[in-house]
Length: 179
Image: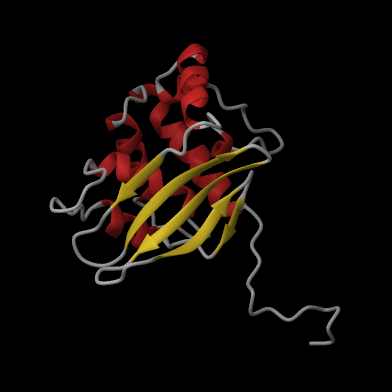
């Protein structure tokens, strides 16, 4: 719900947009953000990099870390963190779809393509997504249990928030450094 944003004039997101009620959302939040647990979701890809989503639940250090796994490498590369907003490099819409649509049946992890897309969606850093993106995201939301009558508008809210958030390109020179 936090990814739907609350920009000026925007409707406040509610659990029902996603097919849940407040009690279900609270119960899920208790599990995902329990300081005694570190939920991890693996999104392995058959060819190319996969992703790992880790809920960091240490007291005083809450957040969600997104790692890329590369075939043939023993370590993962952190590409982004979510601590109220995304920091890091992220992925384009086409990279997200490729990752979501290529599950690796040989590796342990999430295989459902809709769930995979929703798990990696916070990594979206494309400010100009292709025209079919809202329909694809709406289909993923519906597949994951969101009501059909709210899935389209929820997809629009998600994409509007994700594509309009502030960006910082580390290659930009700082006006304070004289460059």
